[in-house]
Image 1 (tube, rainbow over the protein chains, first blue to last red):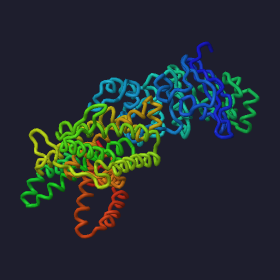
Image 2 (cartoon, chains in turn brown, blue; image 1 turned 180 degrees about the vertical axis):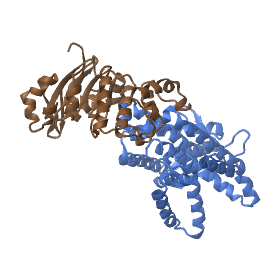
Image 3 (tube, each protein chain N blue to C red; image 1 turned 30 degrees about the vertical axis):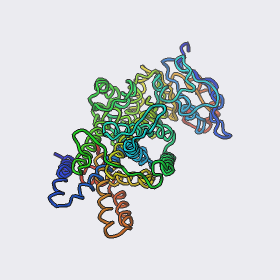
Length: 253
Length: 327
């Protein structure tokens, strides 16, 4: 834990009387896969939205790669290398795999106030599109409209779009949601590959996946961190077991 | 050649041949009517650019149309009177030349779009519709109260603008000028939607949140799209002032914005060529039905509902086939 990439200090976010984040702090070290778990309503998504910039915290600070980003808008954080993939798959349904990835590519290559040349002829896109498709195994699906992809393929595309900008860190929001068993195995393989290359914060319900993949786990309950550490200590932590009382998923991991 | 290419080619040939056909049929009025159609088509295409590709539903597009028109008439008014429009901070005299007046019309419409867009685009959905409408109505009432330029009654154009080599007073030449303006704007728009910028704009329409998380400053792109659309409407406004040789605040009333919106929906949103068909259909139906009844809207309304319900890409979608494909 020498090199902290993402340092979050005492985030507070209120929605009326509810404190969805109540002094939320987390350190994500460079190179690790850190999982954020917690029962429903624990404030995981709220926390994630504050990290990606979709929600502004009422108080607290977020430092990323040595820079204070608490008040930066989403697109600036994305450009600093903090990439997010969404819980509800949000690829562009009407665009093809190639076009989806092209959008991600141009997002990271200068401005797009280019009104005349056909996008497909843009050298920036031309150069980067093949490797981007290969990386997530979609090179054979280049011209398929995203709406016609399988759920698993959409996930791959979604992750592929996040990867294009060579981010320093990935925020993965419940990638296993709605995934069948076959897709889950594929996805675990994909995340294992990504783990070697990127720092990842994984927010996930699927305990099996979390305990398989995570280097460290932080447990969130009612907007507060109740435990943080390696999977083995989390599994045996009494406070965590209390929070997940009756949830036999903890036993499986 | 696919159906789309055939449909567009037939349309283009028909429009080029129209003045000759009209004189053969001894119906010179047709040329005037179709000039009007081409001008509204230009306004509708400009709206389609932001509506059909940028997802920005504006009910205030006629504001920019009206600004373009007023620029022409006000500058001409001062040219005829021999008075200055402005003496401070810079001396601005009236002018009659297309080469001076039209760029001013386009730039002013674009500038107005930049201001209105910068404020409106902070909202979305229904709020965006209402705020664009509100701005257009503000401009409408501004011109209603502008007594120096006719106020409510509007103002006549003493004579059409002048241009080297073209006589705008000649209906046939004016028609071809309108056709050229429309063709140029269509070509520009077509390039635009397939460019990198166009890709970003279409992405914003589908999922703005995702575009932000990819790293796009979406506001800027949408604003530029809004400004380009406003500039297009400004050009159409400059043309309509010359065509009717008269402007009134009614040109920017919200019902006019609604009409342009209807042209886009009728012809096919997000198709560029569709709005041309939409403009033609709406104005021709209006022309024909108003011979028989002044309540022509009663008949047009149900027709419009049918089109919106059953033809997702409007008339263009039916003619060109391949619903959902704008390439």
